[in-house]
Image (spheres, protein in one colour):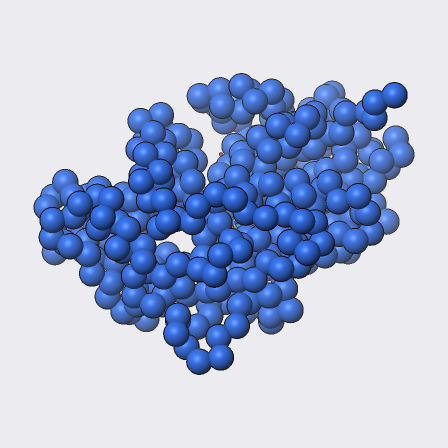
Length: 348
Ligand SMILES: NC(=O)c1ccc[n+]([C@@H]2O[C@H](COP(=O)([O-])OP(=O)(O)OC[C@H]3O[C@@H](n4cnc5c(N)ncnc54)[C@H](OP(=O)(O)O)[C@@H]3O)[C@@H](O)[C@H]2O)c1
């Protein structure tokens, strides 16, 4: 007899990581539900094309969200949180929602695995390439997130406090790329602007800055590997970094790839600067180890790193622009001011 279909609920399924995670679980034949805030959350029908069932609701109204969700299912093998809101009220609402869903599921004999998406910036920035005695950040590295991220870093840990209701895992991916390429899409936006305006591309960071982005589909498959581990006890309560197995790229390497792929007639400069909120993408140097998840689950990344196949990432990004990809539009509206500033620095 075949085993019953497993159920995954992805909170923030129309986000960049949430969407990739939802697609990975749908591909793995989970009954996949995506919790989103509005009916217009999947304008291109990408998620529904993957058979991901969208449910409207949010942690800001837990009882309404539970009512919508339980009209689809009362059992959850997996709940993933992939929202981007660092307010305390959002964390508290999300914990309340997850506890309510876990109780429902426990009543039907299934204890969910809950995966909370944090990020490797929880460890703070690391050394530049070439520093002496360099070591990657591991799960044992102390937590030194910048003040703007600290609420996520610390509130994530609170998900580990409900072992009677659900098993929790915290993931700490590096930056992620592919398709609209999230924050890394800004590199391509800036290169396109420099090409169009025949200007020199200025990247505000030391050329030795370590860039260690993982492909978003590899990241999503890491979530699947955690969920599919045959011995739940081995993953419950654990924290896993998710990063490429190859050592890393540098800002200089990314600059060279941009120069080559965009044929920038006036060249590219990496300009070393103090790390600030305005240049995080270019000046945040961090090498992250992910041996723990690799050894425990057998997960490995298979897609090329960002500079390694800039041709592909340029094509995918340009497609995301043409398609008005919701993850691209969200990021652009969030960083409109910063993008304008960077583009005008490139023009100067
Ligand atoms: N992108 C990266 O490179 C990266 C790397 C490592 C870790 N992370 C972390 O991974 C998580 C997800 O990041 P992401 O880049 O995938 O985010 P994203 O693309 O910006 O998506 C954010 C998602 O959160 C939802 N959301 C935002 N505020 C919400 C709220 N108050 N209530 C319910 N839903 C809300 C959004 O829905 P709406 O469409 O309704 O706004 C969207 O689905 C974040 O914690 C982020 O810090 C990201």
